[in-house]
Image (cartoon, rainbow, N blue to C red; front, side):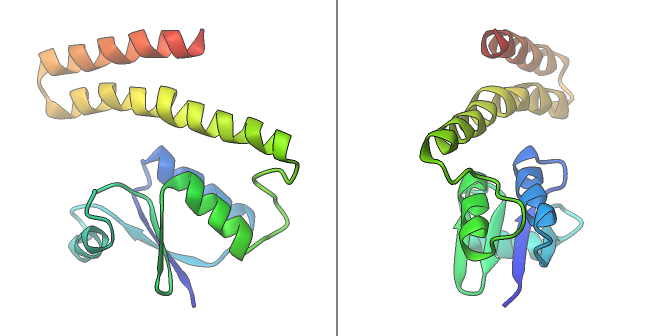
Length: 140
């Protein structure tokens, strides 16, 4: 059965899964989550009411959360590019970097993006200030 990936191309989390799929030449159907594709949105909300993406559908199995999807692909459709090292200690380093960038970089950047999307200059400035403060700590 073919895979379906629900996500948005501007999402860094979706991009991580797309890298895993493309690096190992895994066939899939991309189902964009946007107002331009209302059926995809409706289907996605049925799959994951928490409204987070990406979501991978493999037959009856729904795999949620970027890192889990990547590991699932490695287990079920291994290809020439191993994305998580086999050595457990090296894998810990990869898992740390994965979590660090998701939690302390990308989630923080979202404050600035969300503020900017409101169109409200005060919310834009507040979101940017929070992002700058937290990113300076993370990058230090």
